[in-house]
Length: 377
Figure 1 (tube, rainbow, N blue to C red):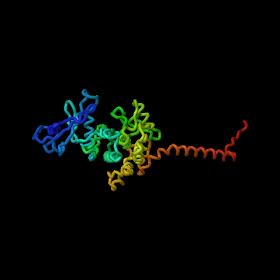
Figure 2 (tube, rainbow, N blue to C red):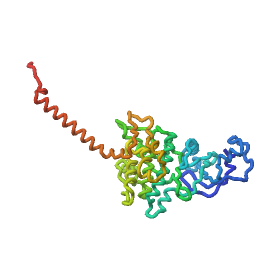
Figure 3 (cartoon, one colour):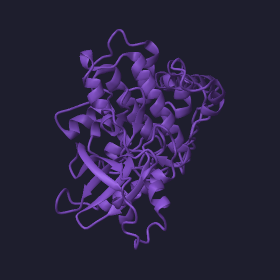
Figure 4 (cartoon, rainbow, N blue to C red):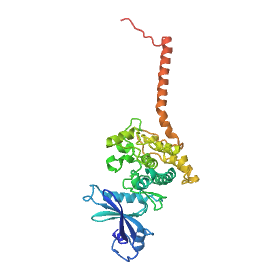
């Protein structure tokens, strides 16, 4: 792998995290045969292909334990490389290689020259995006998730800080796949993620109420749907949907759907309904990716061609659902509205059962059906 590093010239810093730093890079054209003894690549053409043809790269330097938070950062980097090698989508970052040295692990990836989505949002008047811009970015990210879920992977850490825009800010790319999970994996502890404000309830608590008896449930695409909904909320409103002074307060606000702010009046009703359909506490009550693609607001962006809608409406269900749950794959975008009717339907059913029991008792009682006979001892 060091042969690839020989073909890269590092540049200025782009960003920095708790245990990593991202710098600009470009492929070197003045290198002949450096590191030819490396077994990673057999020819110079293989090296050039690994670092890309346009030469515009970024290198994420992940510091090893001892210089940053304790953890197997190199393993995360290798897992991210494995996941991204299975994905190929214009709105998912491309990773070319991982180079592991003594001090750090270097991830060679596609360079996206625009700002992070969070900075782009805060730079607008009022600290939020126009609905049209939000719809375009949301549609692109939705398409990226659709591709990843079809390949069997969940991102599990969608937030504005993990979304970068092109230099013209008209194209979004989903980055940082180190916490990605395979479909059907068990929920991770919320302590593994840097921004619980965007994590779904099943990740915050490790508990999912969808089963008949409740309990833990394996992750399905609904986890990413929640996080993308929280990101869309920030694009439209200017802040994450939920917050709190402590983790416990945040979890309580999430469970009770206590939003930080109300939606501005100029936000389209379809967009507001879309956010609410994605931010349902029960994973099975959230809109599916197919339903979101077919929604009127997303369709208005023109991002999804008409010929794809029939395929997109086939939702991706949970794998290995427990407690005999029905995955509930539907094609009706308004399915989430049944969530608000559920308490009334349960009350109606209970009242009907009580009325039937009383009527049956009265009928049998009138004919002596419930009279007790005693025998003399």
